[in-house]
Length: 359
Image 1 (tube, rainbow, N blue to C red):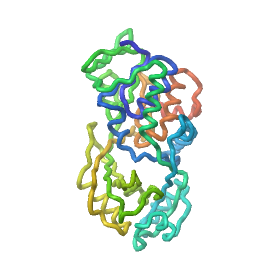
Image 2 (tube, helix red, strand yellow):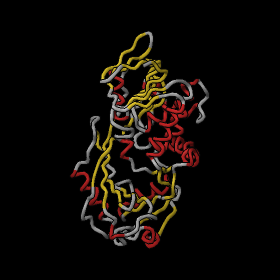
Image 3 (cartoon, rainbow, N blue to C red):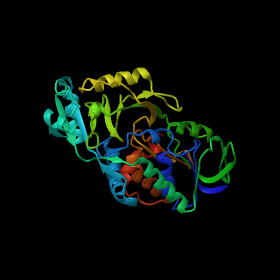
């Protein structure tokens, strides 16, 4: 099967860049699992927070906001984000307040929003109203439909086994068939360096890092619908309402080899203890737990662009926990680069994400 763009990876990175490139040529997206978004993309906290990340990432967030708010009816709904801290967290809280533009709250005001907060341990609180739930599944499906509407294909259960390069382009061998393409787009999440090695391209040194999550029954039987997402100062833990339950994460970043991640019981227990310290309701039962791998480049910025040594190999990688919220602008940047257009986000910002910075 011949195509213009062979995209490896069916998470948010792959489907978004595939959708944008489908306006420039035929796209074939290959995903090894049974469905799209199986790994990190299917295990996201699903929040859009413009302030999350380095300044370059914040610029991508802001450029993505109009798309998230309006395209295909929008994928955002009200949530809000509150940061809370102990007395000993004063310095961490001050840093969060400045970066996240938090409006100070009294402890009573914070407890009015999340009644289980412990007044004996919560010393600081602040609110960012400009944070929203993000419908991750809808966003993935919107991008996948765009690929198909433009004549492309999205193929699951296509585990890549070998990649070769000749004068005609790339050949990608899966367990079922061989695909041929002019440009190879590496959007393989935690496996991006693995894919690069298979293609004979030098890896860039990405590090997958585990992030665990537990789902708890609603604390004290409360209605969680209007609760904000709550983050411990310095991101020592966080919790977020989800379909009447409460998701709690230790917010860890533990380096891992690429694999189908699972929660570490000890790490999860330590994170739940940090959460319990700040609330009045003890954790008595976990309904389920899981983990995902958030993948970072060495400088923790996204990598978007053609490889300096292989002009037909395109990196779309290193989303590091901001893949969903940056997807519209990041994928638009990729399409601008491939089309040879002046990037919408500006040339300086585009250079910040270029793989050439590692050359």
